Length: 253
Image 1 (cartoon, helix red, strand yellow):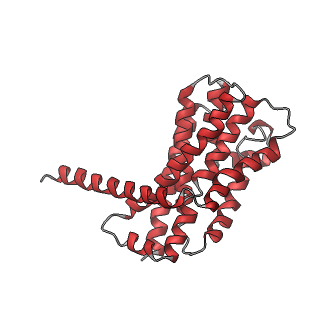
Image 2 (tube, rainbow, N blue to C red; image 1 turned 60 degrees about the vertical axis):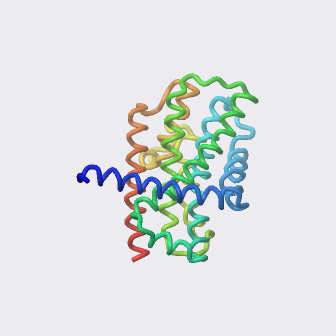
Image 3 (tube, helix red, strand yellow; image 1 turned 120 degrees about the horizontal axis):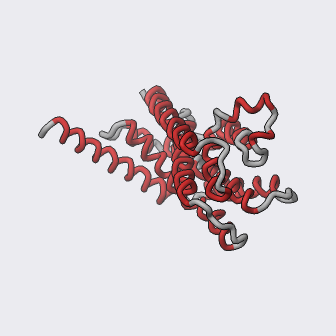
């Protein structure tokens, strides 16, 4: 067997392992009460708390609701599943399995990614059926949902690397990051209206670029060039994946 053929064989094994991990999480954790609350109900109630009474049109608010839903749903699976599996000692067996750590991180991220895409359809369908909001350009919507979902799923996997058996510990740390992201990403406050001292932080939020792409599907305009949004989301994904691999290796040596 040539070196190239061996590389492709190993790559196939890694993807099969990653999918098996994702499928395991889908079967066990998708209907957990804390997943439903943190991934579905919490972003909805939070959005309503800030959106009700505002003069903004539904075509402006629905993209923001989609972005917030993705943020919370994509990053909610791993912070629950991994600590529980640490407590049950099944995560140790997963780490010691004959697959690379990359496959483990990818598999855990895939479960949050797929969950988030499914949940994102709820506000998307509501926008069409209830409010009759047209989609001007489907491409940025699809790309924005896919990249943003995987980005925050990977972020959830990164935070879940913290060696604890309590999901609450990770959720507390995660919310310290998730909540500020909402207010510096142009969802409730347009980026151009954010005070000058907060403008700098806008560029360091992956939600900024995801929301910008999703908003473009409804309005036809973006704050950044769509290519910039796509590149920055990919950069954040790579950073989160790299950091997650390093931390899982460090905490499980």
